[in-house]
Every structure is written in structure tokens, then in C-alpha cells.
Length: 485
Ligand SMILES: O=C(O)CC[C@@H](O)C(=O)O
Ligand SMILES: [Zn+2]
Image 1 (spheres, rainbow, N blue to C red):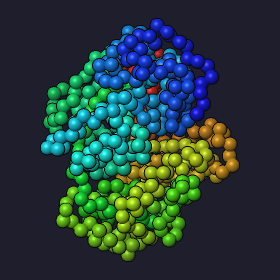
Image 2 (image 1 turned 30 degrees about the vertical axis):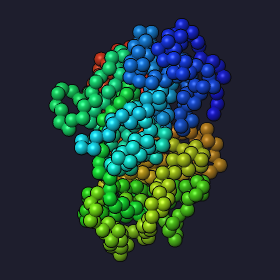
Image 3 (image 1 turned 180 degrees about the horizontal axis):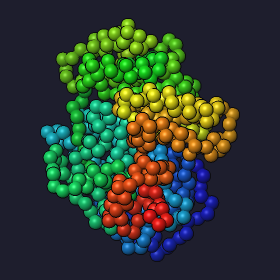
Image 4 (image 1 turned 30 degrees about the horizontal axis):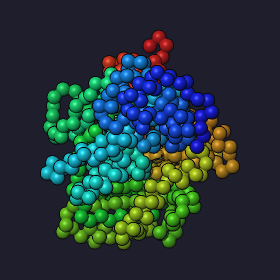
């Protein structure tokens, strides 16, 4: 990790007031202490912070937000710092404070009758899942970074992940939120109601706003029954067309059982098995592509193993898949998921890469992969397309790893060319340029072309109404206004 060489401009008066509000444990100012909060996971953005503020509860958070508002100090909320789009990294002016929620880390309650969980922003997604499981339930949100990602960030970015096709995104799973608004007032929306048509749905506005409209402190999350049976299988396929046929077959037989349907390219799988310790392909031969299928049911009487063998047997017979392995134990199931979850890390180790977190209608996924592969290969010979992701809901991470031997900086200098090449195809296929990672500071430049006109104008009005001083995560999501606009 690189520590910023130039110290942030000190404002001792202000730091003293923050310290009065939070105590010394809640205020970090030394560059060595703040460095890890000023760089993103991908190492694309390097900022500086006036201070990192660590409130312990909503009252403390509200107090520092009020002070920032009064003093005109921009605020960058940060959870587990796992953003893929620089959404939680401060700029390099040293004027911004990072507000880190990790001390607000209590699972407050689980209500078994209501099937809800009340959880604070700084609880990691993994800790929330574990708490739900220990209580006999399931929090079905599952993402690769769940060990570090915190609930506040998960909600602020409307995270999706592996189980969206069955249970929805963070938004669909959230019944209520409490949040501190840009002026320091508290929005008390911790309601656990399934029906609540009382004006504008502010919680839904805050979810997915990437910390630009307020800071979520606590949420009521809807739980699901714990599955009594789960079967995971890794299937080898010739291409994404075959994968789509497999999805069709599974859905035709029993759509309610499909809990995850993850696509992986042969290239991506090769990177994982060669760069990540403790991974190996459990199939006889390398394939052009793979699908990780997970089926699950809360019914105690279902013979899910027999069903899985039958449906995959039929897929094999019909030539939809060329091979398959079904996990025989929890350990093997975890092993299959490791092959999928380590894609991001393997690609990071393989050199510079460009990410395209895009979505298209599920039926267009094969065409997306075909066309984007051809276009990117024509753009940069030797580039290594390694598409993978949540095919069951139409979200593909169309990631590209640099050609072997190319200077990483020279490759990254082509990022926008690559992203725009993929985006043109996604647009043609009625998709979105950001499926689940958000806009952050990587993609605001795309907003006018994709969300222009009335949509972007409405977003700007909402931002100006709630945050007139533009202090909440400035520079994220919305592009700077065009001169004269
Ligand atoms: O590295 C990526 O592009 C995707 C990361 C994450 O969303 C995943 O699905 O593993
Ligand atoms: Zn993903």
C-alpha cells in the first residue's frame, strides 16, 4: 500500500471539534492511518482525506454530518471499501472526510415470526448471513466480497450477486432503513411493513444512491427460510448458447428451485486454477465455458439429489452440457463456489484488467458475449476476454485481461475505448452499463448518453433538493453539469 507523501491540509480547529464529538478513537488523521481508506480495492483511485471519522452510533453520525454541513466539508461514506467503481474513495484534494461505519456493527434483532433482521450499517454481509443462519433462516444476498462488504455499502449500492434471480437485489430484500440525511437530520424509516403506501418511497431512493443522498445507518432486511436441501453442480458447456438452453431446461422443469446460475468462461477458469492456491478443475477436461448451478428447496421431503441427477442427465443426453459434477459434500460445494468467487482475485493477479459490469435481457447474453468478444479482440489483439457472472439474471461481468507482455499502464490507457466498445453493444441489446456495481467515479461520464433527458434532470433535481451544498459523496454517480446546461 502506498502512503500519500504529502500530508492532508490540517484543520486543527475542525479536527478538535470532530474529536469532541467522537472521542480520539473515532478520528484518524495520520496519513499512515488513513491510507487504506483512500485507495480502492482495484487500486485505480488514490485520494487523500482530511480525516477518517468513525462514529459509534446514529447520534454521533448525525452530529458529525451536521458539523460537516455547517463547515462545508464534503463527506465520503465508506463501508468495507470493496467498490469496483471507486464509489467510496475520496478525491485528492484532502478536503474530504471519509465516514467509516465499521464501528456500527451490531445485529440488533432477528424476528422469527416476521422473518426480519435489524442490522447496523457496519455489519459485514457475511456476519449478517451467519447470524441469520444461526437463527435458522437465510439472508439470501450473496456476493464475492461478502467477507468485507458491509451492509451499509451493500444497500447504498443496491448489491445483487449470486442469488438475485430467485430473491432479488438488496432493494427487494429491504423493508426499512434509518439514514442520516445531508443536513444531519435523521430519517426514521425502520419500518418492517410489507405494505406501506405513504408517499414517496425514500428508502428505495437511498438504496442504490451510492451515498450521494444520505448515509444508511440501520436496515430491516427480509429473511427467507433456510433451505433444507441444496445441490450445486459445475457443468461444462460449449458456449453461452448452451448455457442459455440449460437455464431454459431448469426453468421449464421447476423454476422455483434455481437459486444460482453462474456463467464462467474457459479463460477465466484457467486463470483461477492457475493463480489461486487450493483450486482445481473437478472435471475431466477443460471446457470452453462452465455453469455453476445451485438448486435449493426449503421442503424437507424433496429428493433434490435425484432431481438434480435426472435434469443434468437429460441435459447431457440432449447435448446441452458436455460434462457435469455434483458436489457430494458441503466441502465440495464450497470448492465449486471458490472456483467462481475467485474470478475477481485471479483477474487482479493476472495483470491489468478492464471491467464491464453490464446487464442485458437473459436471452441476449450469448449475443453479448459473442459480439463483445469479437469487437474487443479486434480493438486490442491479444486481449483476453474473461466474461463471467450472474447469467441467470442477465448480469455478465464482461471483463478483459491485458494481453500477455503488454505494459499494464498502456492497457489501462485504453480503458475507455474498451468500455465504450462493450457499452455500444450492450445498448444495442437493450441492456445497462452498470448492473450491480454502480456508477461511482468510474462511470458518471456514461450517464448523459444512457440516462440523459428527463431521467438525469430528475436525478439532478433530487440531488439538489436533498443535498443543496453537494457535500454527500460529491463527484460520484452524477456527472458535472455541462456548461450552459
Ligand atoms: O470482478 C468483477 O468484475 C466482479 C466481482 C463480483 O461482482 C463478482 O460477481 O464476483
Ligand atoms: Zn458480480
